[in-house]
Length: 193
Image 1 (cartoon, rainbow, N blue to C red):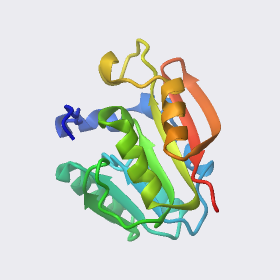
Image 2: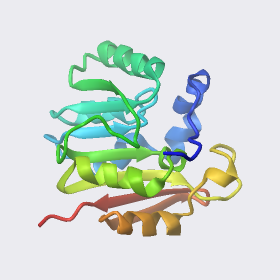
Image 3: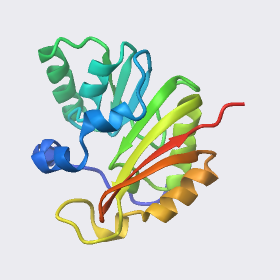
């Protein structure tokens, strides 16, 4: 991949758990839209476990917390231990080359990370690869509109462009939500055969 990739700095990890995020993106409510009690989950760009921890509480399956930053994965491991959760597996890796086998995930979470990968089409094909048929993708990202949080404007992906990219990668968008004018939430499915 020759393009510049934007990575989140672990020095800013306090932002990942800010109360404003929970108000805009209530993790358990969003997970309720996609998660069943036996699902295997992959949380891409897992950060400090914003989705990994509640997902592990909601499923008896395994939650793979994937992040490029080992310091953030250590935080997830500590939080999982504090909560007595044994079904989270932290994995150091990147979305452009997900270190997991084909067709293993029932649910993939890509929360506020796809704007950081280049090219987007390659990463979406990687997500498609690791998902089971009829698996669900929970995708949250930023519209290119002014906002009190989020990446630089030039990195943001408009919801229409994200829809087109998901369709091109073989997904079907089944649900769209707009919690604010600068944030969108999609549920996309990998069709079964």
